[in-house]
Image (tube, rainbow, N blue to C red):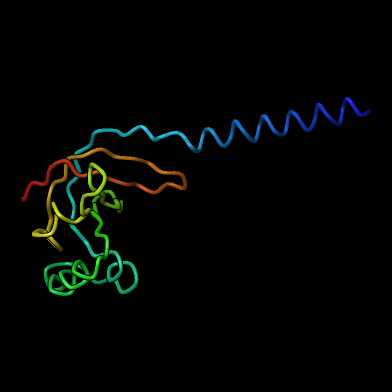
Length: 126
């Protein structure tokens, strides 16, 4: 019975280590082009505010450090935006486009839990 118990413990440890490795690996991005509105996450999610009439508030939220997102209303998808390399302000490429519709080219990461994160490579105005 002791041998069986040890085998079970070893199997559980191996499964746990294997599962940890799956989540610790870097995600593989997919190059995408998405058209949508640059939105202020806090006001859009908590109060439903978005659009040109909300632009001044979004500028204030940006100054306060709020991370912006890209809302693709046609696909009903919200993409968290990030810089394409470390130590870069994630809002730097979108700051002049807050609450406006743009096309973003970048790398899409689909994180655990279904979160969509878009690393910005290029922003084009419409």
